[in-house]
Amino acid sequence: MNRLIPATGAWLLDAAESSGYGLVKLYESAVALPTLKSRRGEFLFQLHRAGIETLPVIVVVAIFTGMILAAQTGVQLAKFQQASAVSYLVSVTMCREMGPFMTGIILAACVGSAMAAEIGTMRVSEEIDALEVMSINPVSYLLMPRILALTLICPLLTLFTNLLGVAGGSVIAVTQFGVTFHEYYDKALDILEMKDLYSGLFKSMVFGTTIATVGCTMGMRTTGGAIGVGRATLGSVVISLLLILILGFFMTSFFYVR
Image (tube, rainbow, N blue to C red; front, side):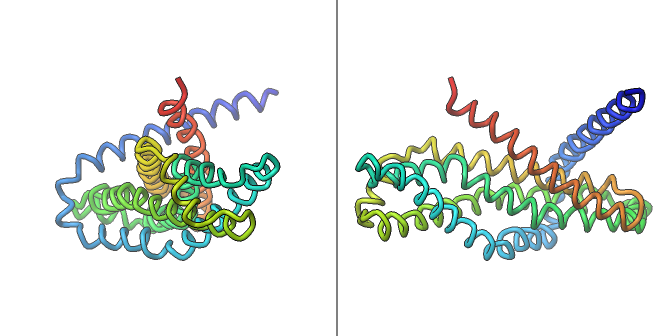
C-alpha cells in the first residue's frame, strides 16, 4: 500500500501532464494552419498514407462488419418473421457507431502508431532538436500536416466504410434470409436520417483529430532510445483506442440520449 499510493499519484500526474502537453500541441497546430501552403507536400503525403494505404484493410473490415451485423441480427429477427428488418439495424448501426468506430481503430493501429514511431525516432535521434536549432518550428513542420490530414480523411473513410458495411449486410440478407436487394436498400434508405450520417461523420472527425494528436504527442515525449520508441508506439495505440471508446460514448449521449 505504501508503494501503491505514490505510484498511482505519479501515474496520474504523468497522465495529466501528457494530456496538457497534447492539448497545447493541438492548439499550436491550429495556430500554424496558415503555414500549410509551405507544407503541402507533407500534408498530401499524410493524406495518401492514411487514405490510400489503409484502404485494403478498411475494405475487408467494413464488408465483414456489415456481414456479421446482418448475420447476428437476422437470426434473431427471423424468429419473429421480421428478417426483412435486418437492413434497418445494419444501416443505422453502421452509420451511427460501427463505421466511425472501426475506421478509428484501423487508423489508430496503422497511422497513429506510425506517427508515434516516426516522431519518436526523430526525438531520440535529436533530429527535432536540430530543427529547433535551425529555427524551424517542429509543430508546423511535423505535427500540423499530420493532424490536419487525419482530421479530414477520417470522415471520408468512414463514409466509405458505411457504404461497404451496408453492402456487406445486403449479401447476407439476400443469400441467408431471402430478402431482395430492392427491399433491403429501400428499407435502409427509409430508416436513415441525416442525423445518423452527420453524427457519425462528426464522431469520425473527432476520432481522427484524437488519433493524430495522441500519436504526435507520444512521439514528441519519447525518451529512452529504441525501447522508448516502442513504448511510445504501443502507448499511442492503447490511448487512442481508449479515447475512441470514451469519446464515442459521450458523443452518442449528446446526439441521442435526452
